[in-house]
Amino acid sequence: MNVSYDIRVRTGTVVGHNNLSTSTDWSADSGINYEYDSNLPLFMDAENGDYRLVFDSQAIDRGSDQYAYNAGLYEHSLDVAGQPRFFSTIDIGSHEFYPPVNLSQFSVFRGDVTVEWEMPKDAETMRLSWTSGTTMTILGIFDADGSHIWDTTQHADAPGILKFEWLDEWNRVIDGQSFPITATIINDPSIIIHRNTVSGTETWSADKVHLVVGRLGIESGASITVAEDAIVKFWQKSYIYTASGSTLTVQNNAVFTRAEDDSIGGDTNKDGSNSIPRPGSSYIRGMETPEISPSATFKYEVHTRSGAISSSETWHAGQVIYVTGTINVVAGTTLTIESGVVIKFAPNCSIIVNIDNNALMLLLGQTLTCRC
Ligand SMILES: [Ca+2]
Ligand SMILES: [Ca+2]
Picture (tube, rainbow, N blue to C red):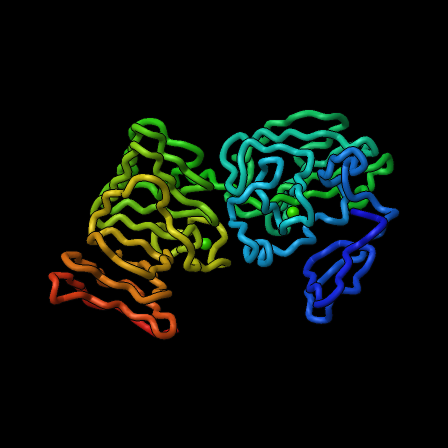
């Protein structure tokens, strides 16, 4: 925010995307840019170096997630204050803005949810509500900073919006001071929710649907056994992380799939058929290689592969493999491709198996391959 000099270009062109400035006069092929109104607030205290965004900052949600990814951020990146970099759409600037509220659970609500908030100085009251479908329930109206324990079992299992609204003395919502948080209530006892960390020994049985929400870490020395025939579903952006020294075992016929997949284990995400599962990144990440039964299935899981395969590996049923460079199955190595794998080849890419030197590719039938 240098007021004296702006950006000077002697030769060439500056292409701008999702900028907030007093000028919108960027290159013709640039993306959307925003004109900054200097009469409106932006930062907490820029003069003293506090570039956190204020409650109604013009920079909130004005960035571009796609350009942030292009620049090297990823979905779990943090901002300079150590908070997740993406909240709703990414903000412009160094800090992601979070409303002055705190929840004990996110994305999926179960049982008692502790709700905390701070009162902005120009607000008289805060109205808290839950809206699901066309039904809005006022959970409380509060007149000071505080916390409230919300019993979600009073509501049907369904997606909805938990909304914080700050009101003025005439009970009008103050401009820009309404915060909707999208989430789903799931109190269904046939679904076990797994979140945060596992520090002991757990067996995930086949008589329940197991739902992973967020990053589920298995600590060193801890273990999860996914039992035979068990169904494990993953909320958006969720995965299991194996710390060094942890154990993850996936037994026969277990199925890993997305929360949106109603075709197995029922309507786990409680939205009827209003969503469909889409392929996404790996369900299992981390430091330890899990022990996976060849009959386990990983639906809607995408892997990108290229280069040498130098220790034997198996591509599991339901996985989608994007071959983005030539793959060499090197001497003495076996690549096993189970029935039900989808392999997509980028242009000019292939899998080369060095058969003369005891490399092997086992195709166990019903593999779909295509050029893309
Ligand atoms: Ca944001
Ligand atoms: Ca559903």
